[in-house]
Image (cartoon, rainbow, N blue to C red):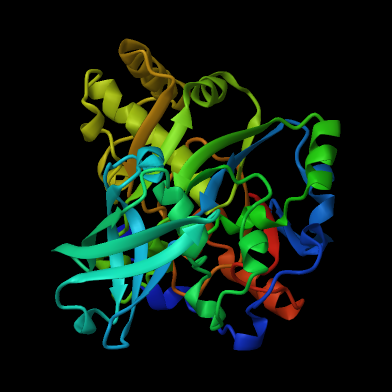
Amino acid sequence: MMQKTQDIRMDAYNYPLPDERIAKFPLPKRDMSKLLFYNGGTITERNFNELPDLLPDDALLVFNNTRVIQARLHFRKETGALIEVFCLEPFFPHDYLLSFQTTGECRWLCLVGNLKKWKEGALSRTLEIDGVPVTLNAVRGAAHGNSHEIIFTWDNPRITFAALLDAIGELPIPPYLNRKTEESDKETYQTVYSKIEGSVAAPTAGLHFTPEVFNALKSNGVPCLELTLHVGAGTFKPVKSETIEGHEMHTEFISVERSLIERLARTEKRVIAVGTTSVRTLESLYYIGLTLEHRPDALPEELPVEQWQPYLQVASVSTSKALENILRWLDKRGSERLVTATRIIIAPGYEFHVVKGMVTNFHQPQSTLLLLVSAFVNGNWREIYDYALEHDFRFLSYGDSSLLLP
């Protein structure tokens, strides 16, 4: 009998990862990183700048154009206690763009470091932006699980919240790097094509791309399309349960242009996702379309993809039909963009509907991202990771990458 996905034991997805194999900094030249090429079960070592020539002739690349925000804010109380406020997602206005554009007040869900030292009262920090003085205040609101609603107010209506984050925020590099953020991270921990602010972690497969690689893709006639998934702090949340069923996936916001959905619905090309965030967004589109097959007039709040939905719902329509359902839904509302959320978990037992190839880095042991890779390569993840360890590949966010074509 085939194992139920929810019963997968996480200890089966462990492997030894010495600290010296975790890349603490990126290479000076992004596209000179190593590339593990997995093609129909065969593994070879290449350089990332060879990617354009390794892709299938009918490849279509999809990128996540999210941009990492300087989400860590530090305040010091009059007692001297240092309080860190880590912005996770906007609470009001709930839309990222509107929240960044606010002048005067906005509310965010945040993680608070040294919470026990901040029982009440406002935290304040005074600064200058382009010679203009402004005082930022933060007040604790209601708790929401491990996070808190934080009310931010500031006393200069010419200053946006985005400008405040840029001025005093700190870029949140991954905790497993075990070092402080450096000035260089502001550039190296962003993809060269990042545009839409909202993530607290980079879509790291994209960190290897350079203008030279994009020029080569263009010369080879490879279409490059974009979507947005704002990566949440939950991407670093370890799986602590014995089986994957006990792990609660975090919610992440996605935004996909109608033009991309239309292209995907009608293309005969092989869709290659750059990064696991692109994979999760593209596969979520299928289940949104499946929901609309049964409820074509569903409200926007009824569209988010739940964690176990793919394993509980029969995939009863084709991929093109599911995508056409989304297009019709958007047309009814006169909208050019699908904005919703996903908690989808992709693990062995998952059937892929959109993605036919993947560019991705090497992920932490016993992580949901490793489960995703295993599902994509039909369980052959250990062979891939053993090869990477034996051939001195660098691991995690600033490490090397792989091109997976099952």
